Length: 337
Ligand SMILES: NC(=O)c1ccc[n+]([C@@H]2O[C@H](COP(=O)([O-])OP(=O)(O)OC[C@H]3O[C@@H](n4cnc5c(N)ncnc54)[C@H](OP(=O)(O)O)[C@@H]3O)[C@@H](O)[C@H]2O)c1
Image (cartoon, rainbow, N blue to C red; front, side, top):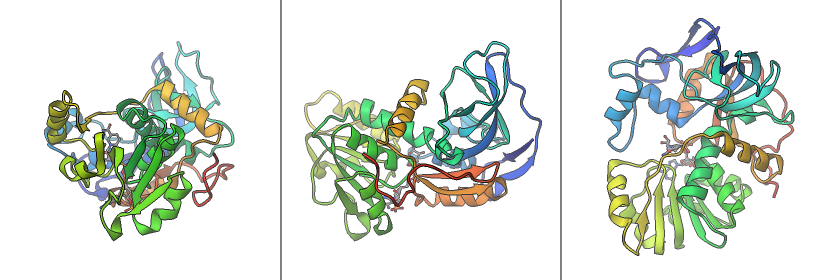
C-alpha cells in the first residue's frame, strides 16, 4: 500500500509517499481502507519533534530518541472497513467508519482496535468531514465540559477560535449555554460568528482578551500567560491553556487550593463515548466540522506547511481518493442551531 513515511525528524519535506506492506488486522482489530485522514497539529509536532513547554525529552522518549520509531503518522481517519479480525463483532466489511488511533492513518490502510474510538459514519457526511472530527472535537469537548466545567450563563473566551480545537470549542461552549467570545484575526471574524460566538475579538487590532472579563479563558494557541490573563478573569475565573507547559503545570498546583483565579493543566484523550456524542450533536445540527483544505496524499508536505503556519481554519485533510460531495453545511454558511 501507499503511505506517507517519515524516517527522521525535520521539516515538511521529510515526509514522502512510498510503498509499505499493508497491515494485517489482529483478532481484535479491523482494517480500514482510509479515504481521508486529518493532518493535525499533533502530527506536525511529532514529525518536527516540536514539543512546547519543556516537553521535548518526553516527546522524544515517546516517539523515538534519535529517529521516529514508527514511520507513519496520522491519528484521525475516515474510510471503509476492508477486513475484520476473528473476534470482532462490532463492524462488518463495507461499513463506513471514522475514528482516532495512535498512528498510521496517513496511509491507504490502517489496522485499528475495534473497541477503540471509532463510530459509524453517517452517509450524509463526506469522508473529509468525518476525518476532521476526532482531534479537535474530542479535545474541545473534554476541555470545555470536563476541565473547564462550562456552565450555562458563564462567559467563555476562546483564543484561536477558528483553529483545529478552537472552532469546536466555540460551538461546544455555546451548546453548553455559555456566552462565548472568540478571538481570531480579521479574515476569520465572520467564520467565528457563524460558529456561534456571541462576540468576536480581532486580535490583530489589539489584545486577544478584548474588553470583557471571563469565567474561563481557553487559549488554544499558546500566545497568552496566566499573568496576562488575570485582569480578564473574573474573581474565581479559570485560565485553561491547551498547550500546557511545565510552568502552567506548576501554576495549576499552586492555584488549586486558593479561592481565587486558577490555572488548569490538562490533556485530552479520545474515547468512543465522546466520539459518539459528537456524532449525535453533528447529526442534530448543533455542531459541524470545518475543513480548511483537502489535498491528495502526494501533497502531504503542503498539508503540513499549512498546519504549521498556525493559521488553518479547522482541519487540514489528506485524501487517499477523490473528494466526495457533501450534504453538510459549507464553512461560510451559518451554523445550524
Ligand atoms: N493538551 C491537550 O490535550 C491538547 C489537545 C489537542 C491539541 N493540543 C495542542 O494545542 C494546540 C492547538 O491545536 P490546534 O489544532 O487547535 O491549533 P491550530 O489549528 O493551529 O490553531 C490555529 C488558531 O490559532 C490562531 N492564531 C494564530 N496565531 C495567533 C496569535 N498570534 N494570536 C491569537 N490567535 C492566533 C488562528 O487564528 P487566525 O488564523 O485567525 O490568526 C487559529 O484560530 C497545538 O499545539 C496542539 O498540539 C493539546
